[in-house]
Length: 200
Image 1 (tube, one colour):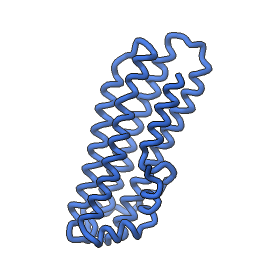
Image 2 (image 1 turned 45 degrees about the vertical axis):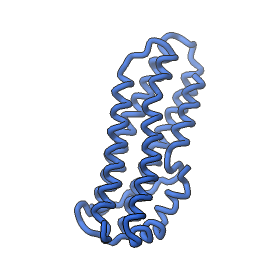
Image 3 (image 1 turned 120 degrees about the horizontal axis):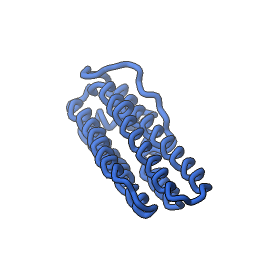
Image 4 (image 1 turned 135 degrees about the horizontal axis):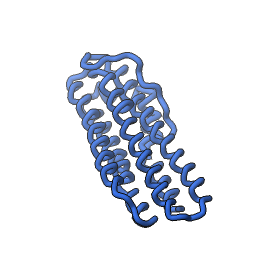
């Protein structure tokens, strides 16, 4: 059962932001052109809020495992843990839809030469993250017959989050490289600085 704690530590390590829980902007600028500085605040705020949700899910998964470790070691233990992981993946998918994708969309399009492309890059990253998590969820539907199989099923969610972390950082770098105005907006945003400073 210690393996689940180890997996939780990996999940925490690949999260792009571990301490930022920024509020997603309340205004809906979907499809509208907005100031690059405001857009940067909003997209980094949405990303930070999403990462904060993932951190909360990871903490609950860890706490759930501590309780499971005190069980009597019966045959249901691995199944119970797999259900916890399934629930965690479901919640991560919902967070990706409702916080990350929705927040990026509502941020609008930055007023820059390639503003539409910048928005599309981040939305594509969010879509790919959700797709990878859904693939991981499909694997978790397989009923494990042993603790070893249950732990093996944890691989896809961990891989999905690791991929998301790498792609997220790459997506923000690509956006910054599109236009000096976008680079200035991202580096000048407090939300973005906190996001990048907390990245592994």
